[in-house]
Image (tube, rainbow, N blue to C red; front, top):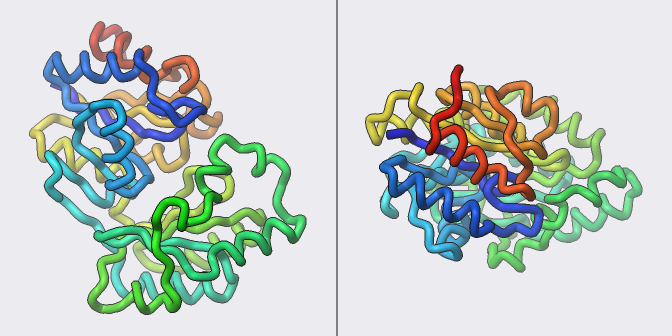
Length: 288
């Protein structure tokens, strides 16, 4: 029995944000053969569950880059930011006036000025043309209310002693501002800084990443790490590549990401996940 961790966007979903019949069939075949297939994504768990439900799939879920792990709908592990970390992050974000969201154990909230801040940076002329053409630009820059995400007026409504903050998601379209913010965030102790596109920043606790998410789920199912498989396409997938027994990057992944994996499969528009599952798991053709 293997544990197979699948990223969603850019991996299991194609460029149209859809899961093909080939991919669904491969996942279900793996499950029928006794393998555990989990969705391990930067998305919050409720969004992952909605996506899986579209295709009649039932899988363990690792949301917000593995900070929240669910099996059969029950929370089995939660990795959170502490209050001091969250307050320092908010202070830096407010100085830079960046659009950001805060994910808690309940839901994702957006700053009330999210849209105003986003439109201001777009109008500044500092956003590279390539960002607008990026495959995930629309997903990350769609206004929060479209996703049903509520707004907060003051950060301390969400960041306080009674809250459980698991992740910050920042839109950083201006490359210089992005570099500046990453440098400032690097001074916050035990903070994990990653991204899933060239223009966002994702912040979790140092232990809140896909690598630990995969480790914890393997431990839950009593599966040795050498029997785990990770498939992804972005920088936030690298931690799970580093711990998986077999790491597989998508053909559409950047060169930096591909350098961290054992195998490169086809692209997400060529059913790369289905190809990898069929070839390397169901037919067990990989020789390390």
